[in-house]
Image 1 (cartoon, one colour):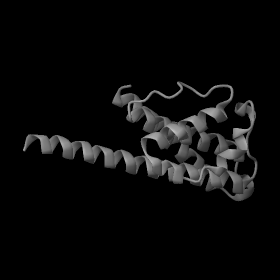
Image 2 (cartoon, helix red, strand yellow):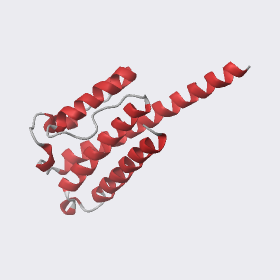
Image 3 (cartoon, helix red, strand yellow):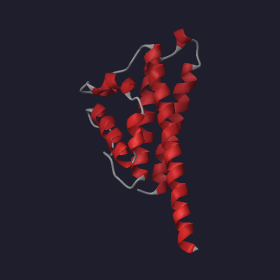
Image 4 (cartoon, helix red, strand yellow):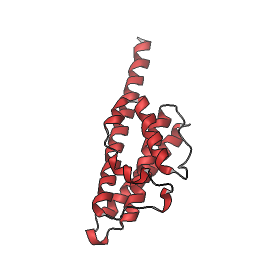
Length: 147
């Protein structure tokens, strides 16, 4: 996959995360929890998929009917590239992992969707840090070869 495709995934993830954050800034009684839930899940999916693709592995092309398996698979793929992904507490996604069709299932609790939003922020930070580190290591190796 081309770098521009990976950048597009990260841009989409950033946009979804921003949208979810803006929704959470509204008064609690006005927050559309289903919108935050969807945007946070999409953001998590695209950050994980982007990281997997950055590492030259092709994960599933799109969420399947059992989208929850796709999240689990992506997390496991990311752990294979970097064990520290196993330290990310992904329990906020557990509620949706056991459901057969996630497209029409949303959390309606402000506190629950806030947990998923916080998880998306954490995954974004983790992915960005790992990619930056890997790029620095690649640059260091290429410069070391020239000396």
